[in-house]
Amino acid sequence: MSFNRLARRSVIALATAAAMICLTAGPGVTGVREGSSTTTESSGPNPPPLTWTPCEDNAECATLSVPLDYAHPKRKSIEIALLRTRATDPSRRIGSLLVNPGGPGDAGTPLPLSLRNAALRAGGSSAEIFSRFDVVGFDPRGVGKSTSISCGDAINSYERADFTPTNKSEDRTLVDETRSFVRACRQNSGDLLAFVDTTSAARDMDQIRRALGESTISYLGFSYGTELGAVYADRFPKQVRAFVLDGAVDPKEYLGGVASVRDQTRAIDEAFRAFAADCGARPDCRFYSGGDPVAGFDALLQSLDKQPLAVSSQPGRSITQNQLVATTALVLSGFPQTRGLLETLLAQAQAGDASGVASTYDNVFEIEPDGTRANLLEANTAIVCLDSRWPRGAAGYDALITRLNKESPRFGQTFQAGQLPCAYWPVKPKPPRAPVAKGAPPILVVGSTGDPLTPYADAQAMAKQLSSAVLITRDGPGHTAYQKSPCVDDVVNAYLIDLRAPAAGTSCS
Image 1 (tube, rainbow, N blue to C red):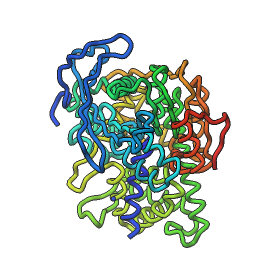
Image 2: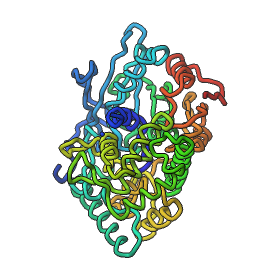
Image 3: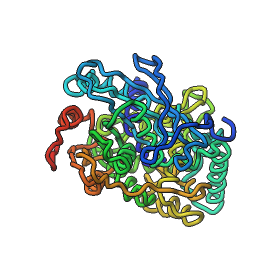
């Protein structure tokens, strides 16, 4: 899946998994209905009023109707799911802070609560964010509880495909499985498939702003959420109050598809080598592998290429090579905090049991014991195929499978389940224009030097491209920086609260 820029949700899920291990629709557009809003040239139709109702953990939930197609706003509308935590000090309330976890395809409604819980534990300026702002999360169009992309039951067989084919027969099988998945997405998602692009999602953000009654909006976006925030700031620079883009992507490379995958794959491999060097230097490391964890991991991949690994805790279930690689990459996004978890998962798999891998995979991809699941992979694919330029047909297959696996035999397949369908996608891409955000106030771009999912060079590129950007550097490993560095937290929170932009070149360890 692309990026797996699953920034916040993945790390939260991994924390749950760590505790466990160290002892896991019909055709058409669902929810689409006729719209009746009046269009204004600059901002689109007037949004309907929001009706907030109490929901989980003292939060409020609502849905907002937005146009399916902003070029024809009166034809159909879709629903955007919202969750809000109210400012605890109403007398000093600044306004609304929108948050997005990334993905693309990750649900944003859980994010206000997870950020709040971490902020209250940390105290200080992070806790003040929740006293001064209404913090609002939203599931972008096509995602989660919003009107969502669905590929039916095809997802279950497709995700178990062999993404490292070694002969013509395996090639044909993979192409057939991919095309079957694409057909199922088209049949189950209908018109929605053509309208889950980032530009449309950014326009939804402005509808949310207007429905909240805010003249300007503040925003905290992670990973792919930085692309979404940058596109919004480019389209609506005068509506920006304070934007923080953490774990930034390179906007130009994001549009290019395959090049972005190569850079991410290299960054993941570097993170794995850092893990392996640490583990190989410690005989007490559970994945010590005779002092050579790299060779141990490669041997594990070779064995899974021949035969999926049984899950002892779930008789009849097994884990494929691709699922192990995806899980490893996501756990690496939290390294070094997730060092112990990764050691345990790989050691269990090396010993012949994929129970830990299965549990972590299910946590991250939100798969329930009964098999029901979030639409993360389907939505990710649909958004990426619309946003980026991908080579088509045989050329696309060759670029994404043959060449990428040859260049990176260890982690080349990390994102292929989400991106290979783009070679056969039934809807033409409509990439967002490269954002500049001319006329916007200062925008904070945050990058981590050891980020394995959005390399630091991406943050530098985004900061260079946005006309008013200020780059903040966290010198350290792991995906995203906020709530991982008190220094970053204080800089970001001061900016969000008081609009005090830090000096260019500010660095935190």
